[in-house]
Length: 558
Image (cartoon, rainbow, N blue to C red; front, side, top):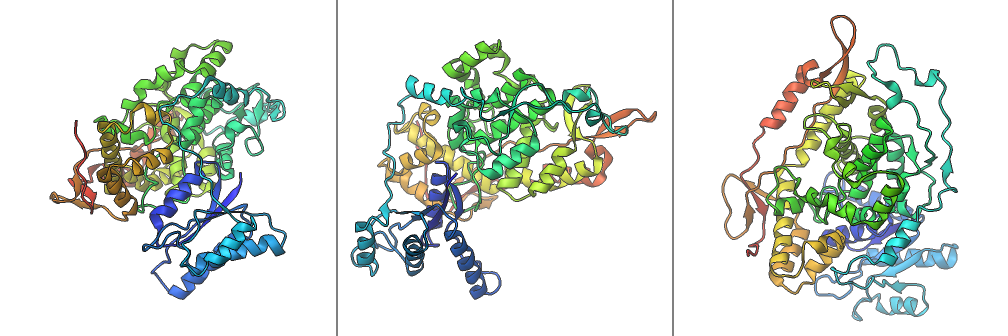
């Protein structure tokens, strides 16, 4: 994966966020980009830290992109700092043997001091104007030829396959004090061939960054080779351009990473495989979000399903059955589409809240790690290594923790993450995007089917270039937003709405013993009053009745 650095004005935060997501969605690892100088502490010291870090990253990047957007009525604005960074990379290529690919967004206007210099560099082919891929009609379906190319990605697996050695009997023995029912179902390794995800170079995994690969190797040390043929399907590959949260496109959050539904789906599949070694259940986990359109749960909100967020799942079976790649491989494996089209059938993959299952576990771990900085990779490993299968109140298998103390640590750290999914920022953002998409559909600029062809960055481009100033203007204001309005009273002449969203949380099981010393389990809230109080406080919190942004927008209605 090529490393890319974005240079440009730190005042254009919404554009920096756009370009960061744009290149991440095309397989680049973004190692630095313009950020505002912190107002806390000494300004000079903070600015110096930014300079030092940025120039260090200039020395290790593969691609340099100058985001010289129009600014203050100046075309292709290049500030002094941005020009210095550009010059540093150019001279590095000339004098220090560097081979950095240098792109600028556009030529600066001729009245800027840097114009003649940059024109000379361009004439010498030292820099290039970024050639953005041509936009395609959104409703053009994936051609059979393209599908065949994607599928062939997994046909030749021998280079990355390794035979998994069977562990010794001692290696699978469970500690005596831990209640581990049927330990071979999740502690032993299967006889299936596996890949090393850290070194695997198959195209179907190319969008996974090294940090995501390392994370996946932790939540499931075994990655079965057979799974690659399904991951290579275009319907799964498409998910690399779909965000888990849809919170990536304005200034409310400054996420350092993009957590895709593609990575999440693989993570869920690997967790299910780890605990079951069952192909059908694993595939149900892989396919559970295959019907996610661009802006995932925003479309549930648009459909009036904000409190359950399940409406988009209706297409799951249809998408699987219409996929030639998936259906061909299912036939080879002797599996019916109906056996993998509903992950709710399998309690390790999914169960009713507040139980812990692969889906809920994975997005708690990955969102907390990559987006909200709730925990470190070492913490994820500690949690993952402690997971086991326990029997819940209904005598059904459920993922839980062997150590109650670690379970307590996990849930107390998770509560702030749960609140992120339904706080004022999240509700305002998802509702606004839902209203924008609905308006685009009402005006026939877009169809729901388009959302299954275009990735989110392409949809944003479509919105901004739709020609309707009401829609495009509101979305530009949204991209600039750094705060939301929230109150018990409605605010006139502004985008102000009310919205109820799904409350996400989990109360995991922890291993215990009954009065006779036999293995048992309890909800962590029954073991620690501090956890019980924290969960109740979270559930009892009352959100603001009205939320919105400080600009005017009235969605179109049919």
